[in-house]
Length: 145
Figure 1 (tube, rainbow, N blue to C red):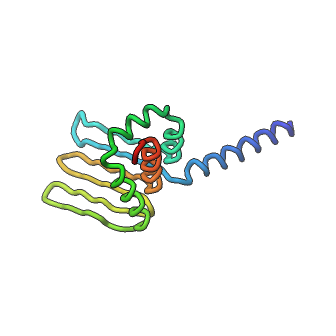
Figure 2 (figure 1 turned 45 degrees about the horizontal axis):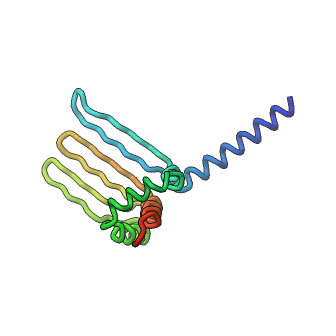
Figure 3 (figure 1 turned 90 degrees about the horizontal axis):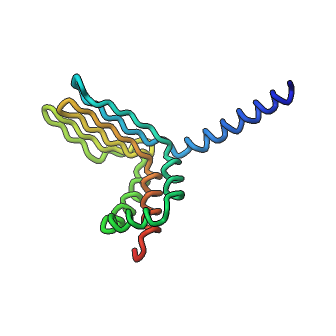
């Protein structure tokens, strides 16, 4: 009986540490809502660590193919990712008119893009560190940059 209690305690502690590690980089969150009868409602949350791990586990030829396709944009992505981390709380863009609203901000180190209009709402939150990880991985996979 004591062995089972120790095993459960060890498993619980391992799960808590693993959960803390996975969530340390934050969450990538995508919410899409269409306000109509047959509207689409997508709410997608993913630990940012999963993106970093996925980029390390992806086959090299897929990363090279992706890097080749985005090669002209990699230097800009790299610089933007570095600069975003310098502004952990900043508002970059806010546009409003009678029916639409778009806002791009950095809040607590996460890039937030909110767009509302025509009965649709799109909200995206991505940690700046994840953007930098993607840029670094794609640059590593792109020969000649």
